Length: 216
Ligand SMILES: Nc1ncnc2c1ncn2[C@@H]1O[C@H](COP(=O)(O)OP(=O)(O)OP(=O)(O)O)[C@@H](O)[C@H]1O
Image 1 (cartoon, rainbow, N blue to C red):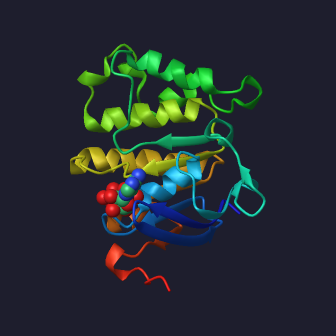
Image 2 (tube, rainbow, N blue to C red):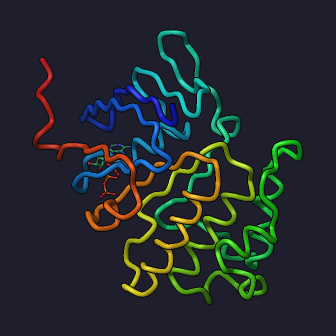
Image 3 (spheres, rainbow, N blue to C red):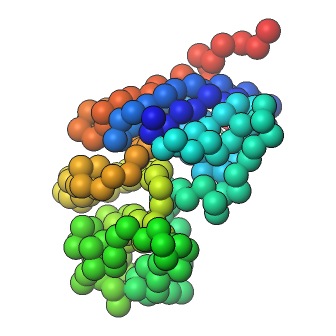
């Protein structure tokens, strides 16, 4: 199983429940704004502690409230690409990539810098500062940095949002390559039906806050 998730999250005064199991290479989490998609990625990565439930990814149990198991974020080996990319602004692209490489355990490295640069077409950007990159280039560097950390799974939060159609098309093609060429499960959050139809083998839909069942 790629992702096996059954969680309850408390966000302020809201409670969100989500359960899904996926064997897809790329599963998409969809739903309206405020449904809790980013919070679910945060919970899977270990940045947000669920109030109860279980998370297993690629056969590894990462969280199980009944068994009091809560694997720390850095040991979960998630390649989490945030919606706002979060490159270090004071480091050139090559130094941002070096940060990812430093996080990788040497014995677990499965992709080299050269392979990542070819895959994501960023070889010409290595000396650039993040502030000089386009939105699409920024996302590509962020995905490259995540891959260089030798993750066991990828979490992509709205990777194509606010890109112009040509850049979105180019990045979608690169995500397809990652999906098809790398043996790593991917969970992608998206608002876009066409993006999901193109990239995902399985779709998990979260209801809008007003459609959530009322607690008894
Ligand atoms: N730490 C928090 N405390 C209180 N409320 C929170 C917290 N984190 C998230 N929320 C709320 O929980 C809801 C879900 O947020 P989340 O960002 O997960 O939704 P989303 O589906 O990713 O939305 P979007 O598509 O707009 O990014 C929102 O109403 C948000 O304001």
